[in-house]
Image (cartoon, rainbow, N blue to C red):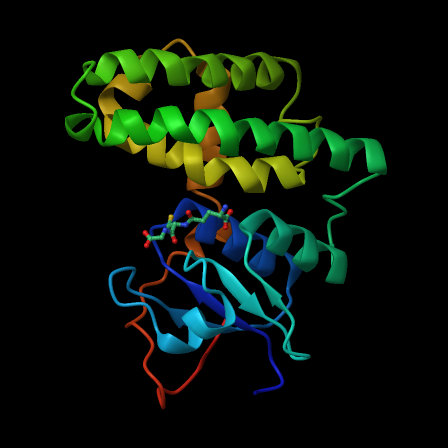
Length: 213
Ligand SMILES: N[C@@H](CCC(=O)N[C@@H](CS)C(=O)NCC(=O)O)C(=O)O
């Protein structure tokens, strides 16, 4: 076991993006192992049989295999711009991310893979997802970021999912009336932080030189 924590990640997974955003933001160093979902490394499955990415294995061998827990772990190690804030702010971020993960993500999957959910056309699922977009728009009309005027855990945790949603049909997304959401989306899309977590790596195999992230 190396001294650095090991992060199993998949570049295009929004949960893994959320973990990489928080780790990169915090400045904590980890060893990145890029995973192919249809061929997950045995080393990852051995420490996390539920077999989802991201998975973080700490230097003391503890395993964190929920993306939101990884966001908390990273920002509790180091939080250079104080994005956590007080307990109330953390609680608000938790609630919003819970809504993202438990409701919005389901509609997003149905919209993105509408051919697999042929009971309704894609627009039906998109309309369901819009409830969350409207909620974010209302928040972003009041302040620059999702909780207040400063970036928070919620911004890092939710952006990758809005990105995935937007890219299902970017022309449609761009013409929606959610102007504050567009502003926020473009802010993160063009940020050094986001660009810095989207490098492409070849999938990890045992014996590969490690990638320090
Ligand atoms: N609740 C988990 C969800 C993670 C998740 O579902 N990741 C997807 C990829 S985006 C996955 O690994 N799916 C397993 C698979 O496709 O085999 C978390 O927040 O980490």
